[in-house]
Length: 47
Ligand SMILES: [Zn+2]
Image (cartoon, rainbow, N blue to C red; front, side):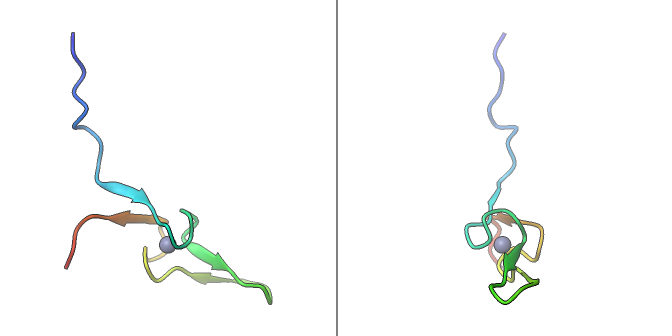
């Protein structure tokens, strides 16, 4: 039996927010990451 390794989706942790989906502000609070749209993942799909 062989397991296919092509089942993985092309989604990686956002390198900007490290997968959190938001930035932690020094002054307090948080800001939604603009790179991943707040879900913490980036896709390889380019527009
Ligand atoms: Zn992000």
